Structures are given as C-alpha cells and as structure tokens.
Amino acid sequence: MSGSVSVVLVRPVVMALPSANHPAFWAATDLTPELIADDDARISPAQFCVAWAELMRATRPEIALAIADAMPAGAFGIVEYVCRSAPTVREALLQWVRYLNLLDDAVVVGLAVEGDRAYLRVELESEAPAPGAHELCFALVAQRIRQFSALPCRITAVELVHRSAGDPATY
Image (cartoon, rainbow, N blue to C red; front, side, top):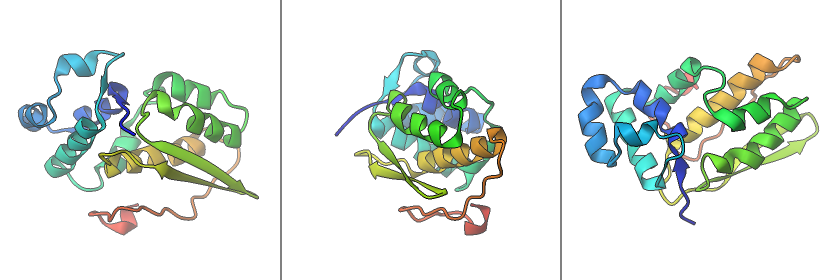
C-alpha cells in the first residue's frame, strides 16, 4: 500500500515550524510553499514522514499536542464538517473513520465500539509512518469530542505503538 496524503495535513506542521527552520524543511521534504498552498495537492507518505521528523527535530517531541490545542475548528475541511454534523459522538467517529482516507489514504484507521467505550486504532500503517501525525489526529479527536459533545467524555487510555520521546504525563 503506498497512497498519498493531502497537504491539508502537512499545513499544521509548516505552521508549527520555527521560521528559521523553513529552508532546511523545504530541502529535506522536497516540498514548496506553493505546493502546500494548493488545496488539491497531495504528497507521498515518505514526504509526510520526513515533514514530521523535521518538525520534531526543530521543536519538541510533544509538538503534536501543542498543534492540536492551536488548531481552529474547520481546519480539516469537509472531513471535519461531516464529523461535526453528526448527531452523536458515535456517528461522528464512524464518519471520521469512513472519510479519513480523503485526507490520508496511506493509513487505515478503525473504530470498535464495546458498550459505552470506543476504541480508535491504526489498522494499517503507512509504508513511511509519521507517529507525530497519529498523536495529532487522536489528540484532535479527543479534543473535538470534548468540545462539541453535550455529554462528558473521558479518555481512559492512550496506547501508542511508537515510543514517545516526550514526557508521558503530557499525553
């Protein structure tokens, strides 16, 4: 499975990057500001992986959590709109899993519901994993659920298959 990633998902990486690191970032990723500005552009999973690696090298391991806190509602376009339009959290999660491939078709995410608990998991990983992207995605899902749900939501566990370089308490 090769796939591609929408530039919509790499824009938060570029925005979080210290401006002094932009020249090295563009060179390492083989991306350009013009490409990132193109709403229809897609990049390879390898470019996405390198973009995240460059961001983490230039900032800190927990940068995905900081990006999640700074992301404005609606940043992920139609996928986010469909999820936010769902009548329940369960339906929103089902829509997210269903339409996530519009943004990243190199990864497959699944949802399992058991009673009053929901489990999101990466079922098929990209050939070039970007662990920071998974951290951002799941942090945004948790944040948006808390933000838009009428009922309280409590995250009981987060299990990452990659070793976090940051402070586990932060997560």
